[in-house]
Image (cartoon, rainbow, N blue to C red; front, side, top):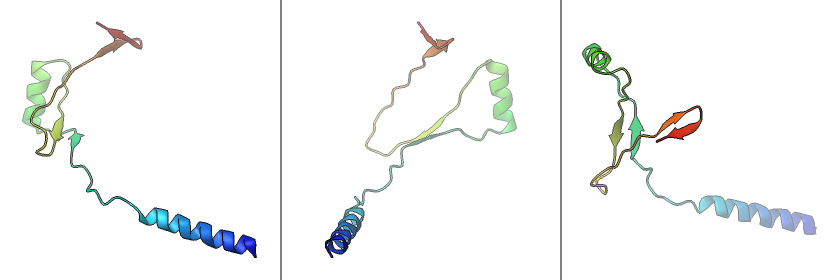
Length: 79
C-alpha cells in the first residue's frame, strides 16, 4: 500500500513540476545565411576570395553589435 501512495505522490509531483513552465516568449534574435541572387554571388566572387555573409535579426533592446574574427591554423589561434 505504501508503494501505491508513494507512486501516486511521485506522479503528482512530476506533473506539477512539468506544469510550472515559464511562459517567456521565444527569443527572436537569430543569425542566418542569406539566399543570394546570381548578381550578388558574382559580385562576391569577383571582389574577394573568402567572404561570409550573415543576416542577423535582433529585438529593439540592442542598440549595437560587436563582431570579431579569429583565425585558426592547424587547431591553434593565429595572432
